[in-house]
Image 1: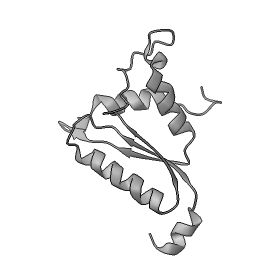
Image 2: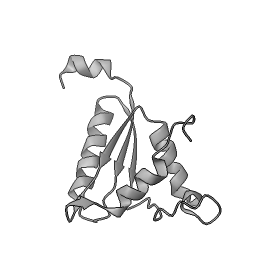
Image 3: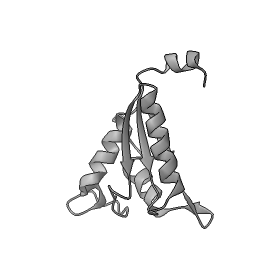
Length: 116
């Protein structure tokens, strides 16, 4: 992206989500790098990492004790809903997506008040 393009994006709120659970994850490293570069360009960045801020397995239980009741579920939902853009770091395990990103999508999938 050239400097003229960057000025049109100045001050954008980004949420960077690292979804790997691997302690030596390359996708987590890429998320850290992306967050640093976005901050260096003057953007507001919220960084969340499933290794340090885990989510529960998705069970679709709406009440007490269910996945939506987990303290980090609201954090992730707010981070996605409040962002102008989301950078999602997703590792590939055995030719598919890991359970962490699947739970994340289920818990934050609808951030539109009108859709529920």
